[in-house]
Length: 253
Ligand SMILES: NC(=O)c1ccc[n+]([C@@H]2O[C@H](COP(=O)([O-])OP(=O)(O)OC[C@H]3O[C@@H](n4cnc5c(N)ncnc54)[C@H](OP(=O)(O)O)[C@@H]3O)[C@@H](O)[C@H]2O)c1
Image (cartoon, rainbow, N blue to C red; front, side, top):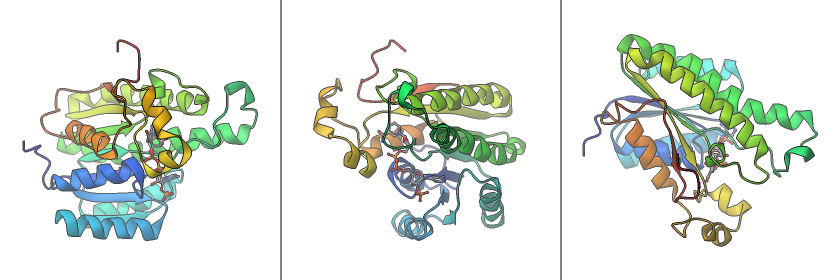
């Protein structure tokens, strides 16, 4: 199926590894031009070179921190100089502070502040600098990667649930505000997708036992979902939160 995004300009944040990286490759495989944003400059440059050689599209690497508006504005300026206005924005973010704790044990204000800035504020900063540039075209796709913990709070995930629920609320407001301008806004809620960081922190065999499909997910599976939401065909889906979790979330919706 032609997803209708060949030649579109896609910004992917937090993409030097893990889910963001898989999404960048998946969008490039569909012919999108990529703007890659994360802090690790060397890794990001290698990712851009890899994307260009594997998928034969242009990729621009801009090293920066999502928590810094100056860095975000620098990324946007570099994008405009090389490609022009964006069509697709995929927001992945850094993880909440490690180790994760029960909420009554979260007594350190600095951890709350960090969890807020890395998961919610960074996403807001990027969104408010990118989405206004989509408005004149009357077409856009915004997809934010949150967590299945917004649907079913997981033990010791309070610093994720609280702020990702905030991201979900922000994205729902945005979806309502920009729908009439041809821009869709959705969130995807992963659980137990086997990125390198997750497999090094958790026992994946134990994880798989709690998942109805009896296995963990692959980053490519999450990336395929995001890529579909970025497609022409997904144009009637907006304001949705879709879990990609092997059936782990036990609720009806
Ligand atoms: N994997 C799962 O099953 C799962 C489940 C639920 C939620 N999530 C969430 O999904 C997100 C991605 O997960 P992942 O497994 O792909 O994590 P990951 O492999 O740790 O990747 C995180 C990425 O975020 C970037 N990053 C961190 N802080 C940043 C900042 N301040 N500015 C810009 N980039 C930043 C990192 O690159 P640099 O260090 O180069 O900046 C890295 O590329 C995380 O928020 C995670 O908590 C994942």
